Image 1 (cartoon, rainbow, N blue to C red):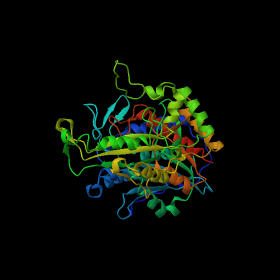
Image 2: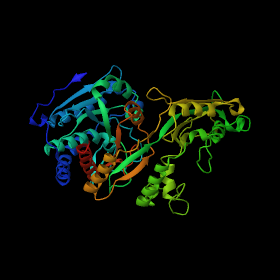
Image 3: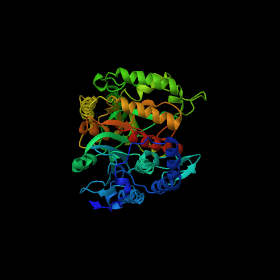
Image 4: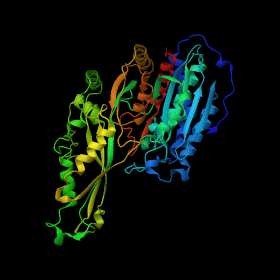
Length: 499
């Protein structure tokens, strides 16, 4: 562990009398912190290609993850938050984490608020606008473009800015700890060992604030109610030891691509996209269906129109699977879906001769409903794809395997306590002028199911800045700075109201 100096104690360490947060002043001052300090810090952060270990095997030697963690730690300490200590923690062979602790300013406040974020990034991807790039930050119309700013490099800075405002106004707060990791985009594979190592220091966690999620629009505060799980891996079909002239072998040697299509037909109805095995489905809780209806009434057709559709054959946009906003929301949050995200065994078009290829491999991404066990699903998927191979071909499915499991389990938020439900709505009204919205997310944050098991009584505030067109993981990713400012102020208001 690399111990960083604690901030000097100030009179803020003494217990303070109860005081409500001045919402208008909080948003004004937090906006100033964003403009003067957080945006410049994120601009520097975007320039560093600190890719997650899954996408950068030489991450340890490159030292870029260490760099972004050290930079964040230096900034955290420079804010002079009263009662704060910080450490860069490094277990052997694992990615570093930033752990910070802020002493409670309330008397008799034994419970802890845990702030979570990450600093590792997805790879570059293609298709960026000519004037943009993954490692080239650019501010345009209130949006900070570049990889990682929104997903979710801003989280550590927003967390500290929220607490800083509480102390500036003299509003008492509970004990707060921060856990900022660098393996999230690789499935948080290093996180559990750190949770074990820091368990006694995490304390009695009563509220988790995770800022690694999305928003339905930029007009109100959005609480994430569920996350899908995932079973991903490589499906490979091998038929030959080397390529053969298609004129000589086609009609005799079965196409590896055709066999792969047959195997996938066991999993998915190619006409509708529905996953065929019922074991990959779960019953949608009634409250989630009701929330989807309420959210559909807010977002309407924007739930699918916001996507970057190509033009179809008649010049009109390609059609979505469904145009019913409720069904769109449920499809992307509570129903399993299959995506092919990579291929191998194909030459480039310019080099593709008349040759029957020896093998075909697809990278599969199977998104799972929140209540399906990811490890069990990966095992079932492997058996389904490999058993009884057509033509006795060599068919193999190798799960990616993350965080010690073959698949990632999703998450369904526990029932909100009355105080949290009330303050979320109050914070949304105060900082956005609209009530809080509830939305499930189609992505996976393995940390949430881990924390739910470790702290079953904790309330969960899972939010984020990934709203329409922000495009995390893809080209032209951006951070909506005005939304980030309001979200930070809302977090401060929630912490202030923690009972």
